Picture (cartoon, rainbow, N blue to C red):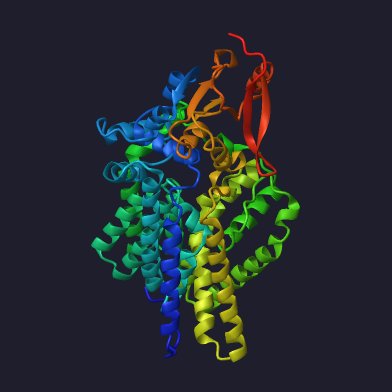
Amino acid sequence: MKTLAIPHHKRDFFWLKILVISIVLLGICFRFANIGHKVYWTDEVYTSLWLSGHSSLEIIEKFYHGEIVNLGILKEYQQINIAQGISSAITRLALEDSQHPPLYYCLAWFWSAWFGNSVATIRSLSAIISVFSLAGIYYLCQELFELSLTKWVAISLIAISPFHLLYAQEAREYSLWTLTIIISNYSLLLALRKKSFFSWLIYAITLTISFYTFLFSIFVALGHGIYILGIKSYKTTKILIAYLLSLVAAIITFAPWLIVIYQGKTSGRIQRLDWLIEKTSLPALIGKWLLNITRIFLDLIIINENTSIKAIVWLIPFTLGFLILIGYGLYYVCRSTPKTTWLFILTLIFTTAIALIIPDIIFGSRSSGVIRYLIPSFLGIQLVIAYLLASKLVLIQSLKWQTIWRLITIFIISCGVVSCVIISPAGIWWNKGAANNLRLDQVAVVINQTSDSVVVSDAKFPYILGLTHILKSDVNFQLATQPQDLLIPKTKENLFLFYPSRKLYKYLKINYNLSPVYIGKNPVLGLWKLDAVNQHN
């Protein structure tokens, strides 16, 4: 669908294409750099647990009774079981985490079966998928915009976007969801242009793939329906019927997993979503929206609930600048492109966002503040900025304004590159959830400096399994749900207490000196050195 009617300006942009290729290569390098040395956080632990075919209850029942267990034994619960086959992984996902459709987990199982179970290996699947997204955005822009420079700018923005980098290095389905969003949007535009049975069949298949990747794909599909109604003036047409038939076919194909989700919901097995309905004030939610929009382009420090106001004040001018640029970009797209272009972009941005924002405002929940749920919206924003920059670089005749827009383009690209340079070597970042507050990377640094150490804890098992990926093989764990189950050996010198409950901390303080552990002058959160004072048999 060629939608932009503007005169071509025959200029030589060879230098710009070389720059874009360099940026893309840099973005690809960032996606694989240090990929195996970042903290394996809770969600990724669950990914590997489901792939192993083991249950979360099995870990509690087998290991949380006070016995000393070697790290290698625990790590078996983070590795696939070839003998049990992929069916055990899908069964475990269906029983304990069915809100996550199975497509990514099937791919990850086969990927691990072929290439191994290391952190770098399983994350590399997401990184490779993310590279394919760059090719996908090229073809989407080619179908959507007449101005050829737009696709090159869009690839550059996504290649060095810190947001896309973070999820390209995570063993979860969000990199795959990004790709399926792009492909389904492209296939819709292709179907609208070709109007053939085969093209609509391809669209239905891409919708199905997207549904089997992430549930919120339904909002993307609904946006497509709003778009078709909008460009056809809300009249029943063959195109609308073809869209509805494709959507129904995709939903029917996805119905088996919908039944699994329903059974999980009614039986109470879906339990890991409680944090989404925690009460959140509207000002806090708005702050999260603004921060997440900024993170599409700029992400220089870890910002979470523990970050001081002083540490983020410097970000306000950047946030305002990006908001102004996005606002102007939306205005410019709506003014300079036909309805078939600007309505497509608006539905991509706002359908998912509104579907999440309205319930959050009404009920005080927080889904719209979760950045990964808004991938469709952020892709739409990046398309807006790509078109704006490409148009200004090509169409403006004034040397002064052309220089200004070149500087703006360089600034945005530089924000992304600098952010990626900072994120790439970091062992942990804000997207790691509770793991970034526990600083598992620092915990591992301290424990790995000792030999034959024992880590005592009653922490949740995902934190423990996350540690197994970054600790030395001679580390042992002593886990318990009840403090009295712990019989800590007297002969062990390197004893550590990790993230204890208040009950366990008080219990151990009777017979042990609990000394905070430091890296330099900074204490390592959640870790103490255990030294016996009056050990009893």
